[in-house]
Image 1 (cartoon, helix red, strand yellow):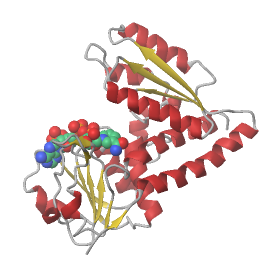
Image 2 (image 1 turned 90 degrees about the vertical axis):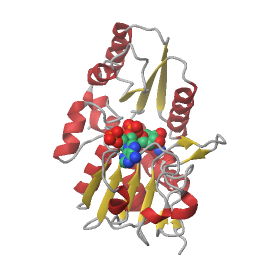
Image 3 (image 1 turned 180 degrees about the vertical axis):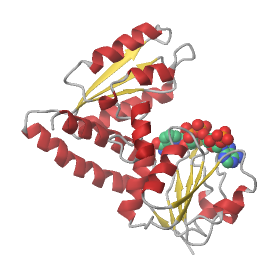
Length: 283
Ligand code: NDP
């Protein structure tokens, strides 16, 4: 069996077109959704992510503001910038590019963002809303995975979903979103005993581990849907996922590639959350 490839690039384009209709409807009312990205320091990877976010906003005709602060900026200066964006009516979504330099408390900064503008979905108010049911801003990567599954027509209800990884950004919100869609959910971590026993039982397997080619074909049930969130560089410097694509594609029913799977969806859902924030601000 060779798995069907879930083409994240194509699905992301389709989803962006859907959200452009909503952005255009706001524009017809004189409202231009606006997103602000704050970046602290000169991390090259962060700069690429921010550039891609700004580009995606432009593609949908959104306004974007890019705030750059020096790596040695004080916490007070960063918090003042957040506060100024909280009060800026042209800005509907604010995100602070992580990781922050060590002298800055990321949690404190996230909590300073107005939860109605928290398009990354990291503020405790939005995390709490995710736990209890509906959040306006599901965090972008797991949200993107849900949309990929939906657009591919993969049934979730009653299925066994196994999420490998429990980070606040990916693993935990992923598990909750799958649970809300009535999957039976298992979360695996570095402390899980006999990981392969769990992964082999998954109808839907989500890998969010951060280890290159970690999930191999012998860890996957025949016909399973395998979603690879990982972004890693292998020894040759090539971008690879957490899933060993070559062996897993021979076993799985569906598989996302890296690159071109989950990655394009993350930024798409960030733009979607910004449009939704603008809709809510002007309801
Ligand atoms: P974290 O490092 O925060 O979390 C990794 C998780 O994997 C932890 O919960 C850890 O368990 C678990 N883990 C580590 N080793 C094992 C193991 N041997 N067996 C089972 N579980 C293990 O990473 P993130 O969640 O932030 O990111 C995960 C991956 O996704 C990374 O490659 C990252 O680059 C990528 N990513 C991709 C995005 C995209 O847009 N496509 C967006 C965000 C992230 P424990 O908690 O016990 O330590």
